[in-house]
Length: 238
Image (cartoon, rainbow, N blue to C red; front, side, top):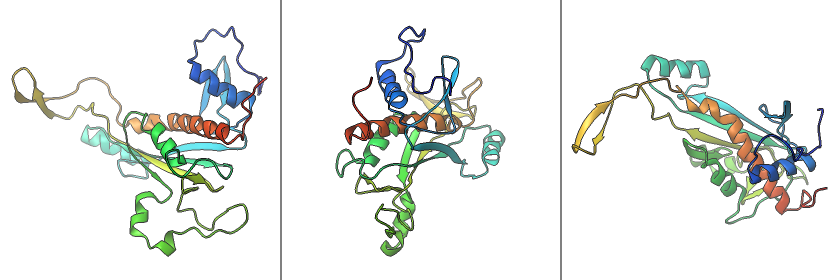
């Protein structure tokens, strides 16, 4: 990469929010690598989102309940309506010990950030809600070595709010957008009567399609902050 390891010039012709500049400085100068499948356009250079040996990758796993995304989108087209979807995020290379057991558990911090994404209606880690149907002996992840690697990963890489060195896995549920040409009913505040209406114009069939790069970004922000807290990354930059 042409400018790898360099922070943006102070005379850049882009107005960046302060928070973005801070995170960018951590990501670039501290070489915290976040290698996802999505990229950020920065001064005519494609910069991969990196966090030092850690890869963050979000993908859509289903649309309208269909693992075949095209089939799920076709459902929306056939019904002339909008549909939701599930987006999964996987993080590899996380060190042991990030997070804490109570208010700032890794799940709490990621959920807090994830629910800032419009249309998010739920989040689950590891086996998530399927864990409710399992026996304890089946859900437990047997530890295999001193590094904390487990035979299974039902916990999704987090135990007691703290990363255990395994792959971090979580999913978010995205609702169907409310803008749909399908006829609906609502209340007319002036008349006090229910009226039918239909949203006209061009709208997304499924806004889950837009979510993966956003989910990768907020995950990177949270992990960068956790790395700083645990002094995995220097707080002093040249």
